[in-house]
Figure 1 (tube, rainbow, N blue to C red):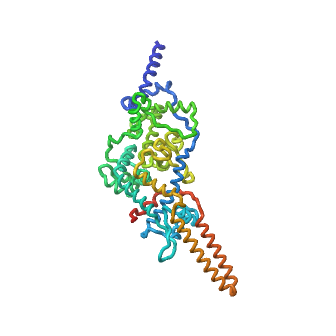
Figure 2: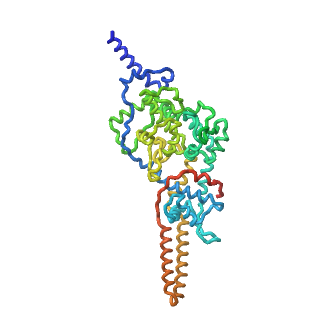
Length: 472
């Protein structure tokens, strides 16, 4: 009799195990006895310690953005002036705000990008000034128009972002820091949050002085994730053969990544593990079982995947994701967690001496370009194109070099004339003038040298005070 009961329980365990795999939401209808299947469940977790392989396509992307970030800071300094121009000496005093360690690096950096910055002599003060070129002004206008035209899309992004939060609200400061990645304007508190009271409302916390953006009502039409649309497209292309992609993600490991036998089996099992949607409320579920932990782990991957899909360039810094860590039930060790899934995400440490970690969505890029570009992305890439143009192709560079050389020759001729007149009167004055000439030569050589510098880790608060209205 006892043997018959054991055999019946064994048969029940084998029959109920596939039901858990095939029905992701079956746990919400009635409670499964996860303890009965624990003996027969195999490990579906991906190994934590993996070989990290760099993808040079994403790293090169960040090296270009390293230059454009400094160019944007210099542009903001110039556009903040009423005359839309600044003297070179003034820019050198503000060099540390841009991220330069020495004052001479500012002039050398400006000379490297003649398609963005234009150096001219002030007609009254007779000193060198810097202003933006017409191409750079047109690029800024293009980005501003693209940002204004995408305000309805930005509203949808913010609504979906709030729906992924467990409390349906996020701190205003955290959203403000990530506004550029989400495609929100600088004044999004007025132009987005307060302009659409049917979607958002501002709430002041009682225990703290922080402000929160709260979602008024959840929209069921917005709970479809980007990965679900990808699966639907695969279903239409392959039909019945695409049954295995029901809970799977697009995995594309970087070049040179060695996939071992154990890792291949673990990924195959992990792809078939069901999970709860990032927009689903899991507060009422029992998360103590092993099966629930597996679902929550995969749900965290889906949440970060959806967060990256909501950004303009399908990338965001790891520090920005950490701001939403508590609200979206993400793991504590985000970097180690993302490194477990190198086929879905890529973390680049280039561009800021490893101080910032930029997370890319691998499936959204192909050969260093976005697969589905938008107008705002194209406008921002236009600035990168201006930065990458060689200075040799700019006529203004040759004119500037000729102007500086003729001016230096005139000054040297004047010094020689004074030396000849005073040669029989004072020999010490001749030595002083030669020393001044040598210092002037050293200064000009330092300004004309090619200096590379790293970008400091600064916040986006500096960009808020800049007015975006200008005349081309």
